[in-house]
Length: 449
Image (tube, rainbow, N blue to C red; front, side, top):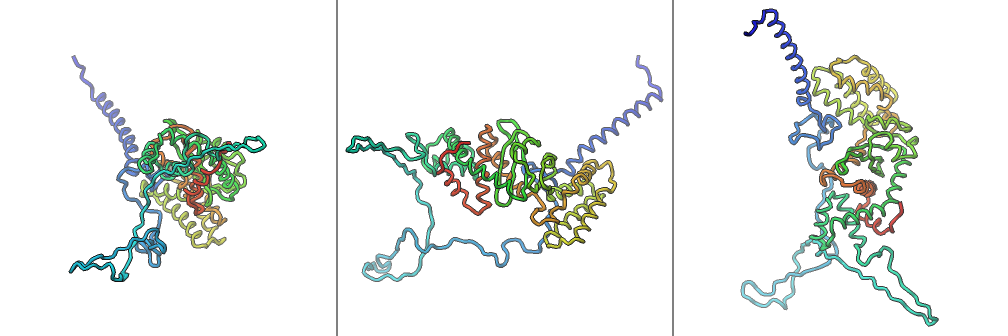
């Protein structure tokens, strides 16, 4: 027989139920908040590859210039132009009259116009055979010839094939299997996937001297940027690190993302460098001469807070201070009074009390307090950039390669890409043809690491 609950028991049970449901509402509301105001590449440091397929339009950090879209007045366009000395000239003259059929071969022709067609010749491999001969002198000495440098096996691929393989893999992101297919279909070269790997390993070894020279070049520069990104090597997480300035890019692969990675990549230390980075703490453990925070990162975070906390004005005021500082730099108005006004407004804002329920924004404010000395150095020194976009561009190529190829199967594969990519990106920064630079490296003898 079921016992009847008293009124007090029913009320107590209902109160417990209400309490449980209230907690569920709070929990589920918190979970839904991240979907209502999601972080993406427009309002945070998340990469574009993590965005949803249909990313909602968000407010751009770039203000309107007032110009119409497209090419501007005075912009010099590019188009196909005729060459002065074509390789082949074909003449087209009527040989008979289309009206009466009369022979026109003896009648002088009148030039009326010309057109040019630019095309590539059929691509066929050129095989060079090296033959050795000996000669015996009258004195009886046998003079022996030797093969040229680099001709070490009965059959091998030449410098152009090596350079093309490295260029297509690194600059054009081709996976090994597709690269081997292209070499076969387009050039008639029967290169296995293992052969492609062997060529890339050889090119990485040849490029070692240039690679180390780039690292030293970065270290000698007064201002450098740094960034890192996760990569998959045979299913295990590693990190690609980029250190760069406007004339050189050095990329390295390491197993961790901590301070030890920076020490091993740059064992000389960064005491002579001004380091431009995001807020990742290992950068601030280095003995750099000075630090500069990336304002682009901060503005994206503030955009996220503005979308999430619509009734709060703290983020918009912080964005205004950063934007005003950037305007001063852009307009060359970094006077003492203007800079002091920026610093004063910033100092007041970072100690202003915030709603403790806005935990992520409170954490952001604490970060601004911690790194306050590293935010406006770009106003005091024109050599210091206000953002770290150059480093983000340098490291992004690793993500593109991984997205196209899936992942790196070995540490060696990732190191090959880092080495050759450093050479290519440095060549591009110096307005050099990256393929021609790779060809020059292919002509080098194998260096010893």
